Length: 386
Image (cartoon, rainbow, N blue to C red; front, side, top):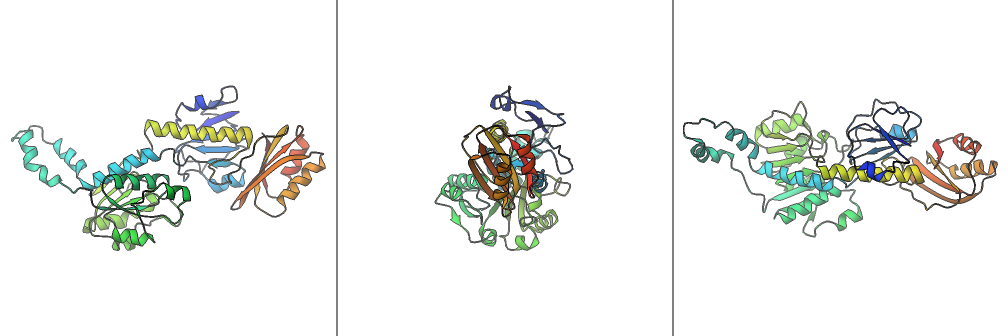
């Protein structure tokens, strides 16, 4: 099987994926799967051979997820694999927002040849780069998943008060949170009470421009905002106006844009959140393992467009069927197999929204006629033997 690499992927994948089963290429024309980090894929046409795309990271805004579902391409991501890396940068961002470290460094580099001498010039001018401590301040965390939860816990350890809100928090994520964290009832409660606000939610139609003139008006004067998630969460024009008016003291983002670079009170980091060696390795390992389990067994873990499904192998062969979540689908699949004399040894079916995956184990080799009959059923996106 051939894996196409759209970006430079950590070489740890060569240890995770058996060289006897897989080859890797940046130019493959008909790959079985694609591994990607940040490359834009919305304008790409995918060959029929592509069964899966593995994003080495959590966000999938660069992938046409819905179109992939329609074409029977399972899209994987790697939630949590880069969480520690982003958490550490978030803590750094909070400190950068508190102390004018960036401005101080830039100023220090202008002191060569100063008539007072560098040391005396530093002591005379350093006061304008002072700031405040974070201890005792309130951090508002929007989104308490893998990254947001770790940021919240770390802030508690640093002596901050933390209030968080996440309407979609999982039981597992909730168990991992410090008991010292206050649960807010809404985004608005976080905005109202926090001295610092850090965003850890995906970019969706519901979260786009969630930081805007209206929400900023409800915040404390001098609030500091950190956004290491996605540029679209913030209306840059409204935030720029708020910093100019003194309502927002500082904005730190990991997503520089034409609107945010070279802007007073904005600190733009060049998308370094998940760029540590450890994070890249962790994401690549998780993505490789998920791809392997799917291509070899049909099992799905951490897909954003198809359900999680897993079944131990039994019988001689396994058929993986990706299809619409519509009535009578299982009956149609069973009928197609019966028509060619195949008996079902074991079956698993799971659904997620509009799409489903069905795994079928049978006790003999699967003839091409069986695949053709299943593929002919209305609502089938893809069927193949693993």
